[in-house]
Amino acid sequence: MQYKHIVFDVDGTLIDTERAALESLSDTIRELTGEYREPSTLGFAFGPPAHVTIERLGLPLDKGLMMWYEKFGAAFATDVEVYEGVRDLLERLTAEGCSLGVVTSKVRFEYEENFGPFGLCHLLPVAVCCDECEAPKPSPAPMLRYMELTGATPAETLFVGDTVFDAECAHGAGVDFALAVWGAQDKSVEAEYYPETPSRILDIVLGR
Image (cartoon, rainbow, N blue to C red):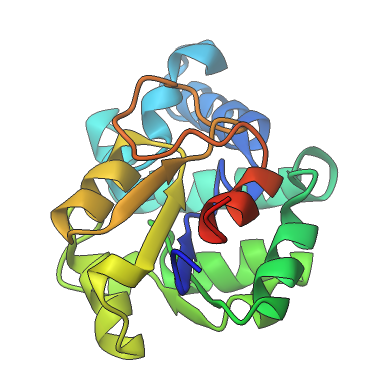
């Protein structure tokens, strides 16, 4: 087995949140400023914590965050789903004896409220949220925190994510990175692996 610890990003990697996140952000901008921003132009919102996006847009932080959270949460029931093959991948990796976890730019309450209902958390027992470490991705701090909690070494750890923020976090911690091509907007991000489907992660981990 090439890797023992497999760590995942959430949005764009485990669950498909692109439509819900960008449309709810566009609605938030329009409601607060009267300006319409095409959702497809807001892709920079993927990767950094939500407050960084709100600040970059020049929106009032507290009001903007609360409105975006509410609109994003309302869209979950109809517009967000687990990527095909993800649940099977997590179950098969667990059966192979891998230790699984999450490193996310979500704060803890976002992770529990938004991701928890998909019923995957029991397969990902160690989750590091951005409010639980010194700095968010692209800093290596979240991955270093994961390794601190689990005793994992960089050589036995693989991080799977969909953005350059994920790649920089992994490489800054000395960890190999797999770009989740199935969810990535930018396919040119530097990575050790470019799996096109979740099932390919199992092949990578088993070295085949």
